[in-house]
Length: 168
Image (cartoon, rainbow, N blue to C red; front, top):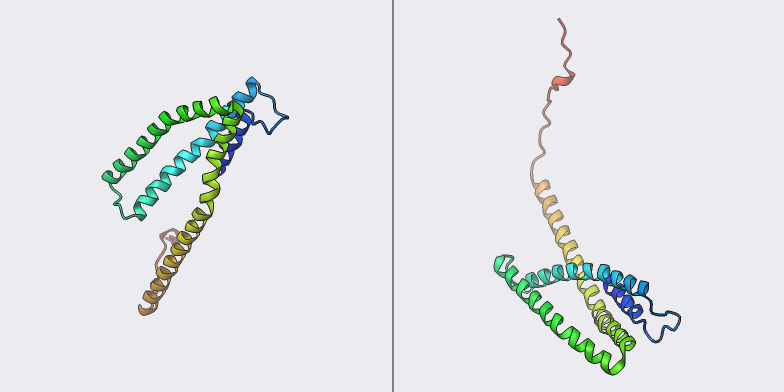
C-alpha cells in the first residue's frame, strides 16, 4: 500500500497537478518524480507476485511447475496488455484533458483500487493470521497431551570428560 501511495503522489507532482499551484514544472522535479515512481513501483510488483501465488494456492492449484507457468503467463500477458493500452489511454487523456490533468487522472487510476480493496485485504489478512494462530494453538495442545501421556524419563548421569581430573 505504501508503494501505491508513493507512486500516486509521484504522479501528482509529475505534471504537476493543476490543483497544486505552488509547484512549477522543472527538470529536477521530473527527474525526482521519475525516480520516486520507479522506487515505489518495484515493491508493488514483487508483492503482487507473492499475492498471486498465495491466491492460486487458496484456489486449490498445486504448488508445482505447471501452476508457476500459468501464473507467469497471466502476469506477462497482463503486463503486455498494459504496455500496449497504457500509452494509448494516456495519449487520449492528454489530448482531451491536457498533460497536468492526465497525470492527476493517473493518480486516481492508481489510488482508487487501493482505497477500495484495502479493507478487504486487511480483513483477509486478519482472518489468515487468526487461522494460523488457532492451528498453532491446536498443535501445542496436541503436543501437551502427548507429553502428558508418556511416562517421565529417567535422568541418566553423564560423566563429562572435560571435568575429569587426572591424578597419578
